[in-house]
Image (cartoon, rainbow, N blue to C red):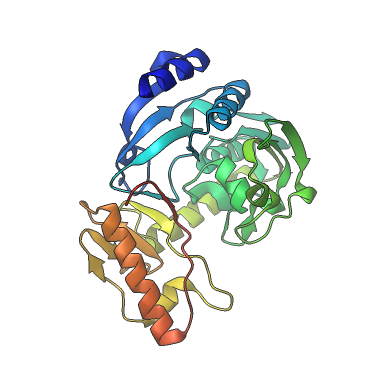
Amino acid sequence: MRQNIKEELCKILKAERVLCDEPMSSHTTFHIGGPADFFLLPETCEEVRELLCFCEREKLPYYILGNGSNLLVGDGGYRGIVIQLYRNFSRISVEENRIHMQAGALLSAAAAAARNASLTGFEFAGGIPGTVGGAVVMNAGAYGGEMKDVLVEATVLTREGELRRIPAGELELGYRTSVIQREGHLVLEAVIALDKGDPEAIKEKMRSLAEKRIQKQPLEYPSAGSTFKRPEGYFAGKLIMDSGLAGYQVGGARVSEKHCGFVINTGNAAARDVRALMRDVQDRVYEKFGVMLEPEVKFLGEF
């Protein structure tokens, strides 16, 4: 069965872009995760469309992966197909005040392209550890800026295999939500519009934001960024800190003392450690404050 699936996949992609039993620890910022049965690296929109049509037709489970910055993969791996849209799908081009980006482009690379073109308004994205596709789906933001502030349109692939170009005003972008997420569309490309700015001011703002991140976030450890969503009226990190959980550890997973909103991999954490720690944090915060924290991190595979 596996050999038949591989043969069919190799009809869509070159054989070197069809990987078997690929360790997901190599493809997540947590550096955690067992092997995926198949790990695919498409380079064009048409290849992505063909792969999804194949998975739907054969009823094969699949997962679309960016740079793995918001994902915890189980120690047992994933019994399905992972389709990565990352460096293989990361073209960026600047046309006057607009930046056209493929879904796999890193936000940091897009922010650098804006800076190099003396365009302002995207400095906030320079330190967000994710891809453009994920940022559009979740309306990523930081330090007062959000994708919805700059997005012009997104090109998506629907569940039915239709390519659609959707104006930003129709995407209903909100806090960690969008039409794209609710409808199960796949973002392939996005366009943002920025303003002309002073090159030195743009560089200084990006430098200042980068310094803040270094001071406030545990960037020296593998993590998935903010582990829990921000509850209405609260900050997850402060609730965790006020629950006495700074430095709380399960196996190799620990609540960061620098920023309690981050769960970090101290070097040898297993997915089960992270998941157990997250449950303990949820229980303690609920017991103390009556607030149930909702994971920001997505879970995939066998735990």
